[in-house]
Length: 89
Image 1 (cartoon, one colour):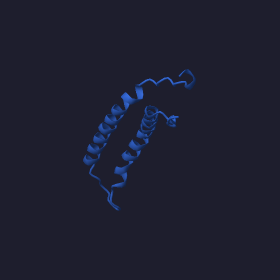
Image 2 (cartoon, rainbow, N blue to C red; image 1 turned 90 degrees about the vertical axis):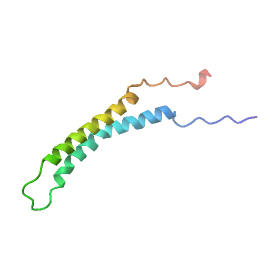
Image 3 (cartoon, helix red, strand yellow; image 1 turned 180 degrees about the vertical axis):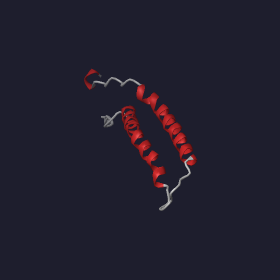
Image 4 (tube, helix red, strand yellow; image 1 turned 180 degrees about the horizontal axis):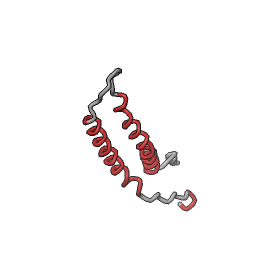
């Protein structure tokens, strides 16, 4: 008698979608931390700062966050597959 394979604990597609949702939830927190970094760049005792580098940094970071969110969007918009009932088989 052949042994039946035990099913995986979670469906791989559902697992990936859950991890993608988790990453999408962490994206704003990551962006906020990255926006605070230029405040830490100033050397102690420095009275004037060059802000042109900070503006370029903010713009590049803004574009990067938009690109990452756009990459996440297709995976998040898919409908949840209906769970298979073991009794129907």
